[in-house]
Amino acid sequence: MEVRHLLEYWEGLKMDLACRSLYLFLDFDGTLSPIVRDPGQAVLSLRMRRRLKKLLRTGWCKIAVISGRTLEDIRGRVGIAGITYGGNHGLEVEGPEVKFRYPVPEKAGCALEDVRRTLDKALSAIPGAFLEDKGMTLTAHLRNVKRGGLLIAAHAVSEATGPHRMRGEIVVCPGREAFEIRPSVEWNKGKTVLWLLEKGTVAGRERPWPLCVGDDRTDEDAFRAIRERGLTVFVGPPRQTQARYYLKNVGEVEAFFGKLGRIRKR
Image (cartoon, rainbow, N blue to C red; front, side):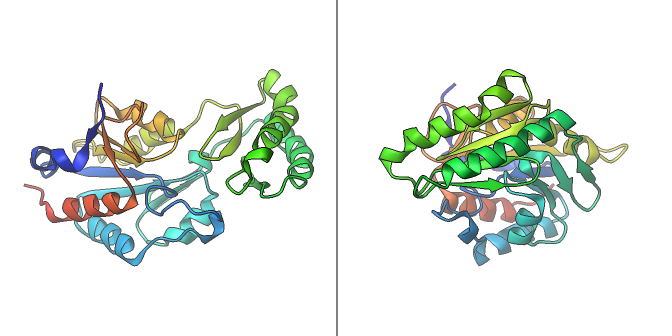
């Protein structure tokens, strides 16, 4: 199915959204904050912060920010009370009503430690590359690597992770100019979204309607999980995606939140 530009269809969508209690599931990098060369420099703009706070104050909109960053990192960068935060793609979650940490198998944990030692050394020899240890996962960052070094870096990732991938201990997921190295477990953003929806349902009331916005391949699991029961929005130029709608960039995400904050539940 062709992905459609959400703002062009807003007039037809807003009446439906105004009738619902919503649960927003949001990525951070590339969705709430622009992609930057140094991940440590990513910030939430004051305007985006105000829009998120306004949505929370409506009383009919819950928000969860689920990121590949660590729980501590994403909570610190957004810093809004009342939001649920998910780190490491949902392997760790904390919010007003929930606290969760996925039990990573010991073999997977040992595999990640072995990869960390090997790959940290290998990437340090490639200008612009570095390995980020996020406790429960690893990320090999290649955004600042020159074209000639990309194949070398990709080969280093493959060599370091190969034996553990063959044994089913870890998985390697290509991201946006990065490789995500995660324990091989049956948990991802999609499972996290469905779990939070269950937790956010009050007995005797209609389950909140999920609205998922993200820009990376890891968000496709969440789009797939709620595609038939909510609103799914990819951020970036239109491409093959499980999302039904797209927004061009972070600026359009901010504009969408502004429009969403002005509708009222009937």
